[in-house]
Amino acid sequence: MNSLLSGSFRGSLLAGAVGDALGGSIEFDRIDRIRGRFGPAGLTDYAPAYGRLGAITDDTQMTLFTLEGLLLARKRGSDPVHEVRVAYARWLRTQGGPEVTPDGWLLDVPELHDRRAPGNTCLTALRSGVLGTVDTPINDSKGCGAVMRAAPVALWSDDVREVFDLAAATGALTHGHPSGYLSAGVLAVLVQQVLAGVALPAAIEQARAELIRWDGHEEQLALLDLAVELGVGGVRPTPEVIETTLGGGWVGEEALAIAVLTALAARDLADGLLLAVNHSGDSDSTGALCGNLLGARDGVEAIPAHWLETLELRDVVERLADDAVSAFER
Image (cartoon, rainbow, N blue to C red; front, side, top):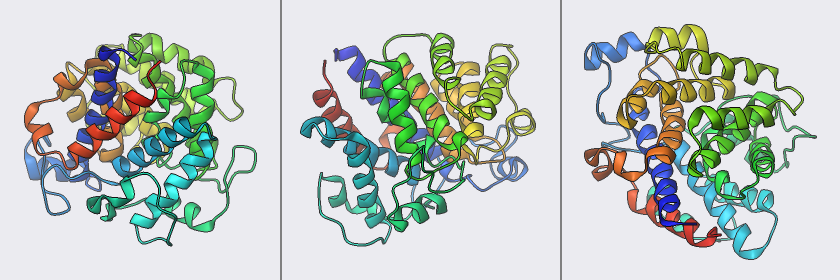
């Protein structure tokens, strides 16, 4: 992995965390309340959440544990789906779940033990002890909890199909509906391709070609195509347009579509993140996903310094990104 690619991967993780932190303070607010709090432009900077500025949520927590599982799989030559599942058990432990065998080092980070509105689907699926797969779904959930954590799978391989399949498999650990785990596959391929220097529209075509191989892809495909149509049309996506055309982002296909639209429409990384969080929906998840895409494209240097300076656990994100660069260098 060359230095340019390593910087882009660090950018993807950090910008995802920044988008998560921006959206975390308005995650459950409708746009009229957001404008009432911050003015006609909506949120333009970090606002207090969880007792501080720049607080990450469960989106970034689970993204970090996804990457730790993949790192351990690569170092050990073990099954990545198994290692990610065990990593999620460690995340569950941080949220008050049962004791687990210590592994990796994220479990030792005290701040990761804070509860940041963890998704009920993830909690329930992981507490069940049942292994969810694409062929034997654990539930019928298509919540965005699978796609929100999938970006690190982009590093696993240069092969598009392998990355899509692995992201879908790790998504299916907790989310059994195709729109839940297929959105994860699309996101991972998008990040993989953008990290490789492919322009976002061309990366979307690659991911789309993989998506249509899968049963149950129609719902995700329809929203992805609509997001692209809106994004290349040159019209700035308002919060109202986002809500009426793509939804609130609470489910996988909507969250991914909002991230794609706002990334395509963005004037720069900061503009894209603010577009992605200012709407009546799951602002932290859509901000995180848009950040994963734009950070992969533009690198760390495109992230406003004042957002990085107050980002919670920036050092943890950077350390894990550096570990990944070393482990996946090829």
